[in-house]
Length: 504
Image 1 (spheres, rainbow, N blue to C red):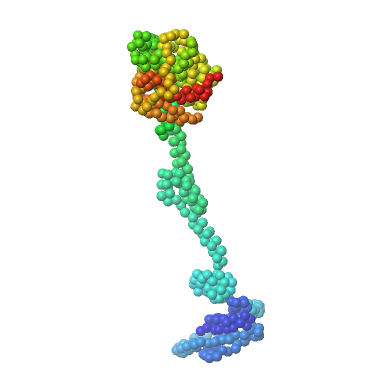
Image 2: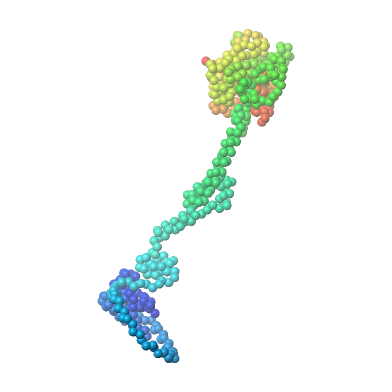
């Protein structure tokens, strides 16, 4: 049975269960205390009845009570058989006990809210009207207000998500990625840290960091384990770097001499080796031998000279080509690394000034030796130089220096020089390619040939079948990597540099 009432202040129609009859409750709208009228049993209310209780509510408040269905009558009790009562013993006189004072009960506050009974399971009190509502409800069905503020709910949800993420730990996949792919593990660890998964992030960052340090240490160790080759100039048409060796045959502390295999030939310095070879092995050919050679070969052999440079850094031997003669003076072209040891050791990046160098000793095809003087270095660290020397002998010749000598791929060529100090050696081959060498300051055109050349051939001439000077032998590929790959700077390129930058 439900009791319906009307609040006398806000005129709200209220409902209360029968168990609240005779108790004081608060109006959920205005919060004023209301006395729920008592319902007499066995009375069926067909019409609303005005009920007023001046002892609880003021006269301005009224309420209407309705009774839906009367409660069924209780069954009549069954009388029990009378039980005989035993005779009571004689009373014993006892000392009188003084009565304790009884405190007067406080007057009941008619407007005080009565304590609500126990709420049903799964219900909470609305924070606004204190009415029982479902725990899953978003709004109170009595007052219409939100049970929980949406902003607060969103904030609590975000906090719960962060807490759950922070407690997330690394799994087997995370461990595998951190061990096998340290860079990927570092990235995933940073992402996990930004998302709040601190435990997972620290594990992945720690493992990946250690593995990255180990790998980088191994790479650095391998990089510095072996010394860098002396020459490492890549060719323009080859993306892979190749190891190149100058052909100057440097002695003393020169590293290229230590890298060459031991042979029975004289050392690159030009002196006889300990094997007992005669010094005459480095002497020029006889006049009779030269006279029997074709004109092109004979002219190239007579234009070849042998240069020996002695300095505090060591001695070196190389070749040169006579390109001009003025009375008793001849002008010889060679490589700069033949006469400048620092230029050779710095891989063509730097060198000494002409005034700081020792002048080389020149040996001609006639066997005469004269001191030379360095006149000119090519600009932009191009590996070319010009040396001047006195030569009164008439047995020498000037090389056939055409302005634009013919050279094509597959054409026969021959090289003249002093390999390992052995003078006036000739080897034949073909033109393997016409290429461009990239340097720090520009491009240098070179001729690739398979004619056999060795350290000591630097500065010697490369000639075509007609005997025209087509290039100055400059470097070869490391024989342990490839064989028959020599390169010569093209002679027209030297003429262009010499005419634009003549010696001072």
